[in-house]
Image (cartoon, rainbow, N blue to C red; front, top):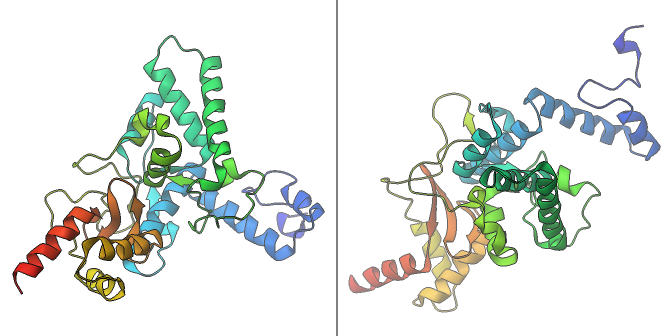
Length: 293
């Protein structure tokens, strides 16, 4: 009997017995098929880590362009010979995204790299402690869903395997740690990005590449967004009032904004990369405009 004649036999992308278990749970055939397709997309990407990187790159591109960019338009390209090489790449890569489980493992592995006398048992204990921190603040974590890249709805119960099934982008995890777990900021994996372009987690298929820095390049002026914020602000001549509107737009990720990072400002996409717009920058701009009136 050929594989086509075995309707209950799962594809290679799913582990043995997966479909049988799903049916025992009462899943519909449509949901099972969606799960099969998602597993196949992950396998085609070369594994979960590559798929996470591709989805995060696609999410950023979609928000910047105003239309949906499929993860398959990106491809994972990095391969590492040693764990130290992988950790160094994550530390430099501002586009990196991983599951909470993998973040905890990477951070514990970094501790072991820094402390040669640390054994695997101590690393395992550190990993558990980091996961415990994530769990204690699970309702505040910047979790995103696979494969859509959408944020997990706040207030919704987390799925049983959220530590392995949801993921967090590096910049968003850094912002979360500043408020909820500042001790984690000692990790080089969450270090603030430098002016030089960060290493790419994925490259877009075809001409052109995505960069996360715009050093030496003129950032998007945000003129239209600022004027719209003035119309909505309670006091259009007050920088604090106008910036409060911009911060709300950033929190809502209204294009071209990608979020608000405490201490850095409104994160937004430019044609050449990602920039931050601060209250001080808005105040200077408004002061210059007032002098020209």
